Length: 227
Image (cartoon, rainbow, N blue to C red; front, side, top):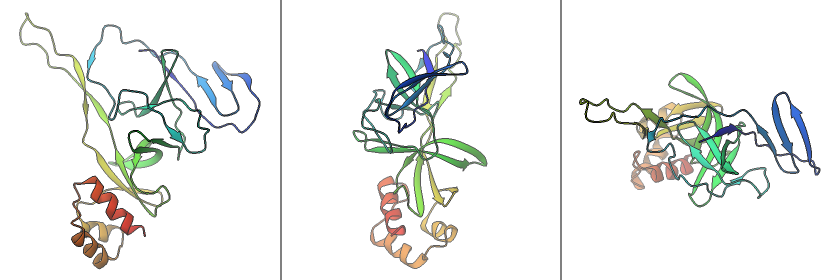
């Protein structure tokens, strides 16, 4: 599959022009700018089993904050941590800009681009937004797919197994201001780490039978915490 880099921004101007920036072809219109970079190398005969998408291989209609309704259908590549769109049978990547919010109505999912720290490393990529965008304590889900090496054949009469995509376990992150933390294991740790009213949080957790292993319960809990 041929791949290109794509930059997708909002342009407030009402005219359309063409420009050249370095070695990149840039098309500008009244609602978007596309920057097409060089082709990525083909994989040749190299075959990978499975796919790198966590929700759907299909390109889905989206709503993007700050953009017109006339935007390309997208899909999330969790291995590359990129949003892809299709144009004339070619696949492009949407440019990442901090705070960019992409809603997939059919999937009932919202992705947001964030700078964050995970396992001591600085990251810049897509997270699934589970709380309100401007919430004091943000709740996010990190989705990733990894590429696993296929097993070598033990016999000369059989083929080696192909490499394959495997979904990683989702990681839940909590933000306070510009700092991100891995979700605490229980309500006691959560209350202590974020200096919450432990008594009211515990009462809510108990009365609503909140299970930290259920996403819908976590969303309910953070809606309460952020009131």
